[in-house]
Length: 196
Image (cartoon, rainbow, N blue to C red; front, top):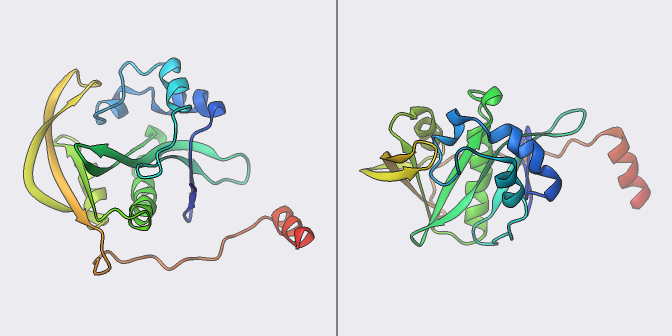
């Protein structure tokens, strides 16, 4: 499964992504805000992650920044199963913080969740990571008013998380971006014409 946004390509991981993934996520400031990522994050952890079998109901995507050259891996976003609920999760490599990539990628994943039939998504953020809460609110997630303790290997302990949820139905109040025509390079346009 793939998705394309204005600046990103969301795609599954491939074995050749291991080194670039390791370089992007092996940062204590990132991993401490994740519940499931091991710490220290090693090259072996990245190699294991990129060969996991895809799950059609809980897809995981690498976030590839579309550039004039080779795309750059800048993070990950996906849906996981948390106690029977579909949970949205994401991380962005430090050089790309504050540029709207988490919101852009997560919006695409929320739309994918609707398409594959999820009726609700949950999400959370550690209390000392309010930027993640800003992302969730921009996407229309509602604070449930609850906090829960979630273990983070990067923190070495359980810590308080703010809990959110979002109903995924046709009356969703989240404004949907209008689809834009895909931009193709001259080479891609020529290949498309030749194939036609």
